[in-house]
Amino acid sequence: MTGPLDRSSKSSSALRKRRESLLRKLPPLDAVLRGSLIERYKRCGKPGCKCAEGPGHGPKYYLSVSFPGERPQMDYVPQENVEATRALVANFHAVRTALEEVCAINRELLRRREAL
Image (cartoon, rainbow, N blue to C red):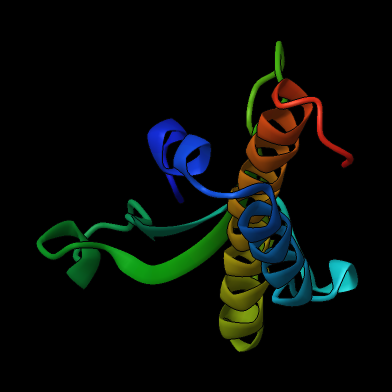
């Protein structure tokens, strides 16, 4: 992401081109998933189980989603869905990063009293 100094030194035309470039590179919005993918190992508690000495059974994957003022919600992700889930979460982070930059560009254009 470009910093405030980078944006203020660019021409308005360059800012609009950067904004359009960011928008063209966005993944489809139906391919995003908010949250983090968590890898966990659990101990079963059975006497004599190998998990008592090692890292535990796993890895097991969970999607963790936090909302302001609430506890994080955890959903189990079956092994066959881990890679697809990882890609959807990565798309969400890419969209959020691009959105922040688009907002900063729009703010700079507004500050210059230019057409958005």
